[in-house]
Image 1: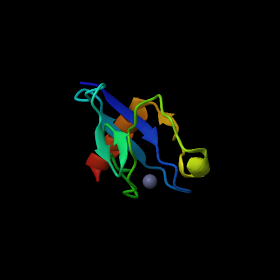
Image 2 (image 1 turned 135 degrees about the horizontal axis):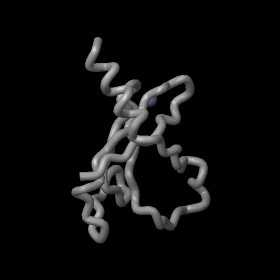
Image 3 (image 1 turned 90 degrees about the vertical axis):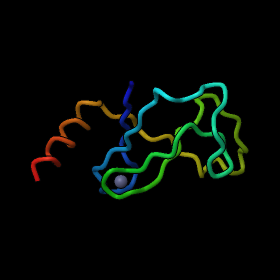
Amino acid sequence: MSIEAHRCNVKNCTGLVVFENADFDMKNPDTIKGVYAYDDPTCNVCGKEFLVVPYYVVIDPEVEDDIEIIESACITEWEKQRNSNHVR
Ligand SMILES: [Zn+2]
């Protein structure tokens, strides 16, 4: 099992987008919202939905502005956040 965490890109949101990548079928991604994607994790704070997509993509340059790759976060950051949530 492998867990990945990425920083939410919503302004002022400190949430993380966390997902497990163990079950991904790299050669046969699902189609989510009309694009190939392995998963659709959500931010653990604001609930914004993201898509985990294959790394190599061919995109329509006319819709390029709609695509934003969010920054990955250290998994320990998520673990810290999760632990502090358990305390509450
Ligand atoms: Zn968020």
